[in-house]
Image (cartoon, rainbow, N blue to C red; front, side, top):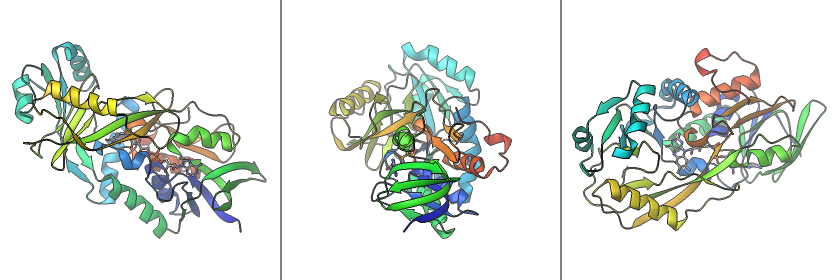
Length: 353
Ligand SMILES: Cc1cc2nc3c(=O)[nH]c(=O)nc-3n(C[C@H](O)[C@H](O)[C@H](O)COP(=O)(O)OP(=O)(O)OC[C@H]3O[C@@H](n4cnc5c(N)ncnc54)[C@H](O)[C@@H]3O)c2cc1C
């Protein structure tokens, strides 16, 4: 039996569930996920941070536009300041960041070490503080959108990989692992598989580049849960308290095919080395490690809007390392592209590229 809908959303990561939630308010939506559970890929593997000073101007505008929308989802942000730190060799970058983002507060090395006494005074040459950064309850946000979409009548199909599709007679006809689907519009929210899905639908790719990023929880003693997230301005490591240990990352960007990403031991060791160089934490072992694919368009901005070459096809891809924090605004923007609704000026920063 063919499933009929106004809109078929491909992918039930944060992108897919956010746009499905918006669209389900007044459209019949079917959400198609290839895995047996949603949020299995990149969405379930993030560092869960909301950072207003992270990314280029378009990302920062989407982040700022998202902040008030979190209130609609409940109490999902917990304060966790961000401390950008610089070694002596990185002071030029710190100055550039300070100039580009005057809202950041400059700290001298001793003030930086006061925020995290594990930092080596001899390593930190300067710092910038984003005092109102937060940790995001990622699964809470995902569930807010997924549960909300269901309550608005959306069908959610897991084990429903979209294999092929064609546009005829004013509709998309999708062949999926859960059976045929017919919909007037399709949203490609397939994360690292965005270009694979485009090929399956017979439309040109947009040059998405999945990049593997590694994270681990390292065993550590004497960690204060109130420490900020600490990231070096050269983007070679970051760490923050996590449970009884610290979450660490070497901030790697290794090109990858779309896949179920796995951490490489070398990248985990690199994260420990770099954090140990800047701190007295003396990290030696990890309790868990994981990796996920952060997927970028060539200009590193999200792609949200209609495909000019394919009627009824919309993209919601290329969220890179920001796809959780910008999901509230980007989901709304993508839904407006599908329905033709006016987009508030504050959100008109991502477009089809
Ligand atoms: C280590 C790490 C740290 C990060 N930290 C942060 C952070 O602190 N803050 C932040 O905002 N972002 C962060 N990110 C980035 C963020 O996680 C991503 O931008 C976001 O999860 C992307 O969501 P998505 O829905 O596009 O992709 P995904 O979550 O990967 O969802 C895409 C879905 O599409 C499905 N799919 C693919 N092909 C098909 C098909 N043919 N048919 C049906 N379904 C299909 C997949 O199975 C998948 O479930 C981090 C990422 C990593 C890896």
